[in-house]
Figure 1: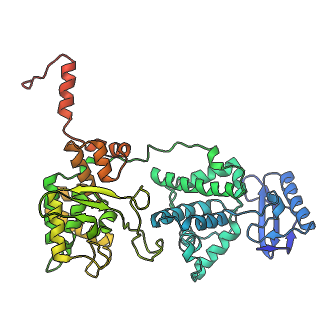
Figure 2: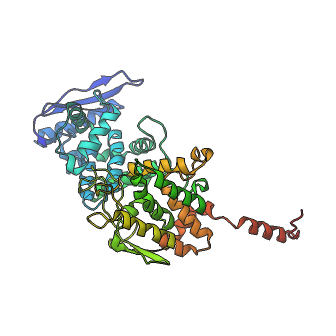
Figure 3: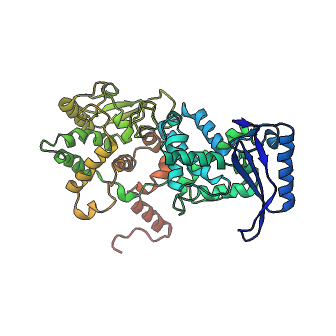
Length: 462
């Protein structure tokens, strides 16, 4: 909103800091604003610009407190408003996971770019206000508790104009904030990179809107940690015998009739024998499966149902409904499945049938199985199938580790990497980076080659 009701006061000196600064204070429509400057000359110059704009009859923005002329004739855009507009522009096409990630990063960035002053809400309240009320498009009209409403009023007044990021010191402040958690401790490398990517894209949008001449984050490069591709810890990978014991143990999990465990046996079988992601198994339909009475079958994967949270999906359900990860919309991934999995799926269909929409795996009420439910069943299966020291280890600690075990088993069986990558839904490059430490069976061969090169021969007696 704009207002012509502007009051500009005389300069004042802030002596509370180690080195006194000069304050330019003014109000727009009754809302106070101030700018701090290191020298009196700078403060006088800025105050003169405000006076000149007011004398010309320019409207002042009630959020930033600035007249249009101070930003090259274009209305100043606060970083909060940029974040709102960026989310609006990306919301419709973004997946639920991307919406979650986007608002998480922006809720970290926006509070970093604010004017100094009193009345700042606690970091927890400010983050909740941004994440649950201000940024997500469908939640902006929700009724706000007074604590949240006060936090929103504060951030709307305090959010700096995007143009402030043309100062290199501001950019460094932003990067420092992106690299820290809410408690001030260093954030994980992947968290930092994800946040920085969102901030970079939001600033690219500001350039597109002509509120910035170029992306200020392009001017600062800060090396942070190793590659984002994380190798699988080979200690989490079960061997085929352990995998079979875990799947059998599921039939003993659950209530008096143990149906809940049996209902999940084929689900976990898909993660191991077909190396499917949990979301892909949750979206699997009977029509996607070819299940012969004997021999190999196949699955044609077309959809995934990842857990995202009700706040981020269009349907209001906890699970999003998307195409396959890193594939074009409508693209199919074909996975040949071995006889053990074919048998598991046939047994599952015989006992439990399908949900009304044809999905193989559902809760007793026909809903998509919650991650908390299958994770709880997996924890119980581990306690039944593994010996005590294995239960307390990282071995198959998460359901997702079954996928790692399945891919590792394919590689160690000699299946060429391009074929494994195609079945698992990876690129060959990423596959080999992730599973580099899980390829066994070659160490002795390499040792023998080294001995031969040294001219020592291969002497098994010594």
